[in-house]
Image 1 (cartoon, protein in one colour):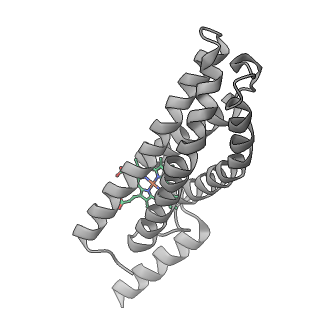
Image 2: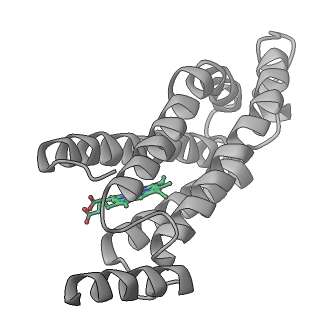
Length: 171
Ligand code: HEM
C-alpha cells in the first residue's frame, strides 16, 4: 500500500493532532496534580479525579487509539515501513505500552472518582495520579523527539528490504 501525497498529508495532520493533543491533554492533568500535591487548595485533588473520569473515555483513550491507528497506516503506507526503522518500531512499542497502561488505569480512575464524588471525603485524602500522568507525559515527549529527529538506524529486515529494492531497480 502506497499513500498518495494528499492522503499522506491528511493522515499526517490527523496523526500530529491526535498524538500531540494526547500529550497536551495529559499535561493539563500533570499541572492539576502538582497543584493538588502542593496543597494550595484541598478541592484540587477532588477536581483532578472528577475531571479525569470523563476525560479519560471521551478524550485520552480516543486520542491514543487515533494516534496509534494513523501512525501505523502512515508507516505502512510510506517508505518508512512499520518494522524497517528503529525509530518507528520504538514509537510503536512505546505508544502501545502507553495505550495499554492508560486503558488499565481507567479502572483506578473510576474507583477514585467515585470516592471523590463523596462530599464527606476531603480532596487531601485522595491519592495522587502523578506517577501515571507524569510518566505518561514523559513517554509521549520521548516519542515526539523520536518522530522529529528520526534517528537513522535500520532493522535487519529494513536493510534486507532496501537491498531487494536496489537489486530490483538495477535489473
Ligand atoms: C503518542 C505517540 C506518537 C507521537 C507523539 C507521534 C508524533 C509524530 C510527529 C510529531 C510526527 C511528524 C514528524 C515529521 O513530520 O517530521 C510523526 C510522524 C510519523 N509517525 Fe508518529 N507519533 C506517535 C505515534 C506513532 C506510531 C504508533 C507510529 C507507528 C508505528 C508512528 C509513525 C509515524 C510515521 C511513519 C511518521 C512519518 C510520517 C510521514 O512522514 O509521512 N507514530 N509522529
